[in-house]
Image (cartoon, rainbow, N blue to C red; front, side):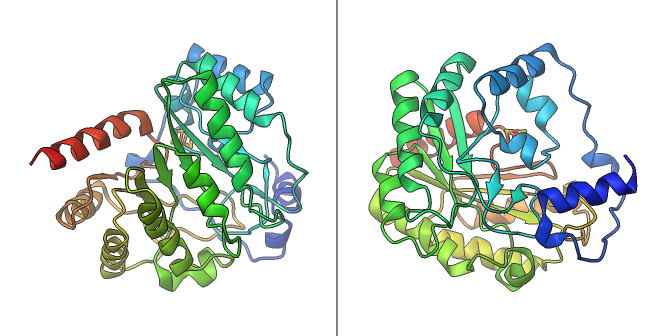
Length: 317
Ligand code: SF4
């Protein structure tokens, strides 16, 4: 791809980042490499997403796991359009003014979930600060449609923070997803540069409030490492999440999508991830996934089964 094309693409997808200086993209270490997608089921999944006019975070965020996940029909649908009203410096999702909500989307998501035959589905969204409820009612409509079309499928939502949207969280919780996921993404010190439109304590409170509203819903949160955080800061975030009674922690390596995004500060080694996982387990999470390629929705179906088993074992003690 030529440098001219890269510049044009940045301007189209991330106009707010176009004037930023370039951060050269570092070569990935051997433990980050993934195979190019070419499995026939990958193409079936891709065609179904196209046929149902669905957007996926797998594609929009340039997820490195897409070959593996889509070969197992595990696509994470991103509802409410492909354009986000925030402008996080780590994220490759297009930014700008989104379109009006599509009232048919819940039915198309539900149809795709039924056709994929999923045991567990993860549904996420762009941030919709432009909507009075942040898109909460649309989330609830999607959950209801999936329940009707695929009653045996368990549902995980990965939501925005609903900052300054009073009552929005309650609408999503009342729709009773099996897992409520909201990512803290990074340590509080880095919020002004990495997640400038968000507030650390708003995100933490959101997770805490889910448990207060409905303790039966599993809560989950994730962080990226490799953005310049220090190990004690990661430990502090784990403590904060445990105080909010979050059940499941995911930790993965940040990868820089383009030269206009935040630079990778370091590639955390698999051994360091194993140390983080031990630390998190010692702090009491029911489940921890911490590897370089861990993402919020990576292996979410198997992890949900493990999460349920871990809770049952805890209650049986
Ligand atoms: S890890 Fe999640 S976002 Fe990435 S390809 Fe898999 S399902 Fe999609």
